[in-house]
Amino acid sequence: MDKNEWPFKGNQMEVNPNAATIEKLREIHAPYFKLMDEYVEGLNKKFGKQALYVVPVGQAVLALREKIIAGQVPGLPKQSDLFTDKLGHPQPPLQAMAAYCHFAVIYRRSPVGLPMPAVLSKANKPQWDEKLNRLLQELAWDAVTRHPLSGVSQPVGRRD
Image 1 (cartoon, rainbow, N blue to C red):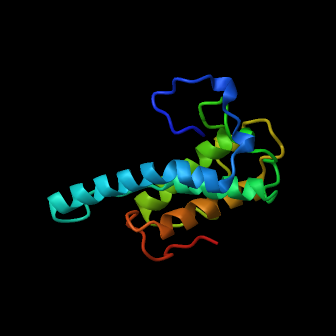
Image 2: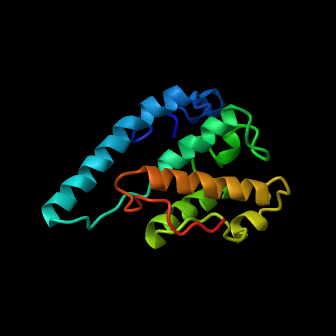
Image 3: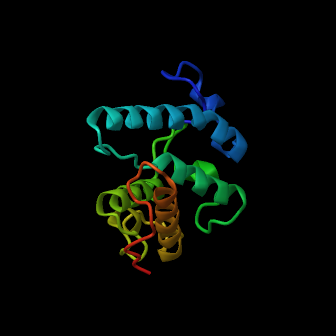
């Protein structure tokens, strides 16, 4: 959600994802990312090993939104195209990218080159094509390999 408020108390209609800048999105999400990382680090310290991992879906979403703002995502001209509503429930491209992030962390392999998932191919949107799918895979892999708590420190298992 593009508003730092939980539970959401305001008017949904006042939320405009298309007006969000990448700077504002990073500012809104930074405290949450920090809190989650600290929580996972604390638990791992308690267990004496890395027992928990972070799947950086939020970071991948911000990277995708940055590309949309820059006009670099064919098939997704507006940030609002990522969401079914103003609360941020995901459309199929975000669902696929979240799955790619989880795949990368679980299997410690790049999702780049995986076939088009049904969530995209059955969406009846021709603009959500192989090119978009590949971008979602690349952004997911990039977010996972950059996050220090993902458990994937090197770009291994590339599929491309």
